[in-house]
Amino acid sequence: MSLINLLPLFVTICGVSGRSFSIDYQNDTFVKDGAPFRYISGSLHYSRVPSHYWKDRLEKLYAAGLNAVQTYVPWNFHEPTPGVYDFEGDKDLVQFIQIAQEVGLLVILRAGPYICGEWEMGGLPSWLLTIKPNIALRTSDPVYLFYVDRWMSNLLTLISPLLYENGGPIITVQVENEYGSYYACDKTYMIHLESVFRQYLGQNVVLFTTDGPAASYLNCGAIPSLYATVDFGVTSNPMQYFEAQRQYEPHGPLVNSEYYTGWLDFWGQPHQTVDSTAVAEGLDAILKVNANVNMYMFEGGTNFGFWNGADTSDKYMTQPTSYDYNAPLNEAGDPWEKFLLIKQVISKYQPVPSYIPPATPKTAYGNVSMVEYAWLLDSPQTITKNITSDAPVTMELLEQSFGYVIYRTSGPLPPQPSGSVLTVLGVHDRAVVYVDDSLQGILTRIEAINTNLSLILKSSITSQSQIVIVVENMGRINYGSMINDFKGILYGVEMNGTPITGWTSQSVPLNDTTRIPFQVLAANTIKQSTAFFRGFFSSGNIPNDTFLSLPGWTKGQAFINGFNLGRYWPGEGPQKTLYVPANILKAAPVMNELILFEIDNSPCLPPFSSCYAAFVSIPDIGNQH
Image (cartoon, rainbow, N blue to C red; front, top):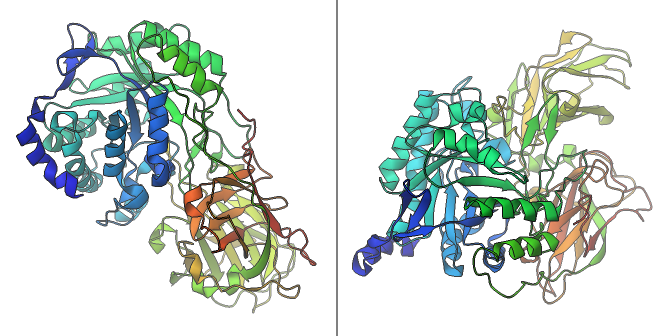
């Protein structure tokens, strides 16, 4: 941060305030330092790539012939609780921008406050949902704007010294994201955001919006004082989409802010791909008309931890841990055919480096036996907060953003025979149901967006019975009108149509795996669901990237050395392996710790010969590149 403090002095002494980046409306172009300029950019999200690899990935963008990188700033990544800001380590946005400049790239910053990006709640912090009932997100709701303004004062103050005119690499800054696709259509909100951006960034920086290439999107997404750009995928005739931009920007540079090199995945659906030749030809068509372009994504990266988002159509759909996106650099940052074809196209329009960057080394570390075990429901150490009330409370009221909530009945229950119907009103998103430690079944929101879900109990209920429901947050909705996406049990629980009152709601964020009370795996202690398993392995003297394969495991969360790798769900697919970056591994002779939290059903039956995971050198995320 010391460099940031020195930048204003540096600007004054060295005269870099003479640097400029602007729009020449008469000649339909950007102008950089007085000369016409066209950017060819690629998206790389610093939040999806370990900081250890930022330079490697940015150098690969440069090697492809790109002159800029585009990145989102997820608000919830940096303000986990109100008023607490984190810009350190893997969240050091300033360092990412400075590295981009060091390797020769300009920066296009998409500052939000909303980003979409298949990211948890579209980058908005979930604690906003606790501030005010029915808060109107992405509008001029004064409560929402209070927290937006406070966040932006911190973010924009941080990045102002990094603007191009101040000696940094940031040439343009996006305000909001695809606002024309949002139901609110609140022009007052967009005008307010522009005033905040101008307050901290000044009058010279190019501020822009991005929307779909049709008047139906641009009508609400564009305002006259922000430069309107569009986004679209592969086409042989880009002018048909740029004509929509021209309706709002009759003059100025043509800009496709998201040229789709691939597409996003959902659990339970095939891995999405876009033909490499078609992507290259579509890029050529865009560059032929002298348009500016950002390729979304150039590397997709990984939704580590609980950061994946979700979407809705006729049902709730959640995104997997891999955000590979079928991009020119794969999830592990390695170039493949699509990279080479894109580089060939760019070379027709501007000089490109002659070298092809190599893939990072991969190592298969083999099988890892799981030798220790703990059952969640016997692990009070993992619980960080309890609330006892008549009805279950949401995850947000527990002041929790991610992970799981355990709901336990806290008093006597009216006796009921087996075959009774238990109805959970508002399951967000997936619930594992027990009666007296006996698994009854699983309820999942994936079956429908917001319905009440029921199951028939296998066990009878006595006055001494306890019903326990473990609910997983599988990712908040990041797009559309349903982003006010509360988690947990929303509206209560009924037995045969009668409300059950008296509950203890327990927060299990799983943000500290040292709390788990492991014991040696033994036949007389094993539970197959909502259970932790631990094993140990060596990654040699110089650890390399690897991939975690989980044969026989069903659904859960994986941790290595306390780092949350993300969700696994190999039976649902398309993703079957998890990317493991080398920087989270420990060099020999220190052993690495692997923890699996299995929600559904582990393969760990006595004599435990199938109770293992494997580290392989080749990923499986569905259809391969």
